[in-house]
Length: 219
Image (cartoon, rainbow, N blue to C red):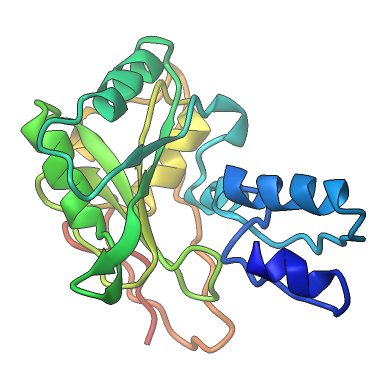
């Protein structure tokens, strides 16, 4: 309300992390500004819904996005929606809570998100992402019990049914068990996909398709 009052007579900018209209709160601000005859302009920005494409998972195969709250001891709805997406063979993007802890701004981690999934009985594979949208994102794929990343902000993806190209893409972030379980369609020869280096990188550590503990590594 205070921001809109100032905007009646002055230029005001609201800076948003990610897509500016990804949250209903920001859409509400636009609607209230329109009611007050305040001219608005939206300058779009890259958001998480597009940034997850770097994992190699098809954006057309994502189901409903869910959010895990930090306080989740008795919260079942995110896991129920995940289960519905899985039943339809769809990938699930899991966003993590943003808030303050003891007055300090703090982002929920992927490890905390994995702990929630495990607590609700999930035992499968996930993609863990940190720093998506940056020049050097951290992406790992493997069993929900074995993953962690350091870069922020973080999110999770639970893959649905995989096309062979998606399987190949996930193997390039090769942490673990799906490598031994994922099979290519009959008659298809296995190919190795080169992984791009960041602009600053000069060498890359190579690895076998199922070597543990590696994401994209560059010196």
